[in-house]
Each structure stands twice: as structure tokens, then as C-alpha cells.
Length: 103
Image 1 (cartoon, rainbow, N blue to C red):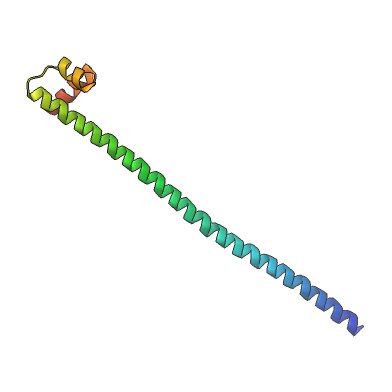
Image 2 (cartoon, helix red, strand yellow; image 1 turned 120 degrees about the horizontal axis):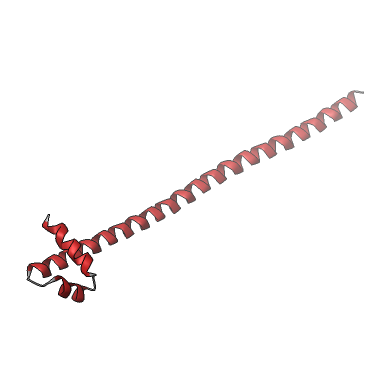
């Protein structure tokens, strides 16, 4: 009888060790997966944010440069139609730029 009890206890210990190892592996895998996913997500978010910021800065810079050229040409006495023809900016936009800078 003692032999059977010892054997059963050993079997339960083996089952418990396997369950512990499985749970430990799951916990470790989850922690590694979360860390990897977080790092990947941060890197991707940073890259997207940087790209959006650069694009916004470029658009703003081009608009500022365009306004400077239009205002410079206008201050030299060129009319809206001529400025539009040389800059490839619509006459409406040229007039809006001139009006905005006059304020």
C-alpha cells in the first residue's frame, strides 16, 4: 500500500511540475511578447509621428516661401495676373496672400 501511495504522490508531483513549467513558460512568453510588442509599437508610432511632423513642416515652409515670393513681386509693382502666371499660383490665391500680408 505504501508503494502505491508513493507512486501516486510521485505521479502528482510530476503533473504539478509540468503544470508549473507550462504556467511559467506562458508567463515568460507573455512578458516577452508584451515587451516586444510595446517596443515595436513605440518605434512605429515614433516613425509615423516624425513623418507627419516633417510633412507638416514642409507644407508650412512651402506656403511661407510662396507668400514671400508673391509679396516681393507685388511690392515690385507686378500685378496679380503677372504674379500668377510666373508663380503658377491661381490669381485668387495670389490675391489672398497679398490681402493677408496687408493686414
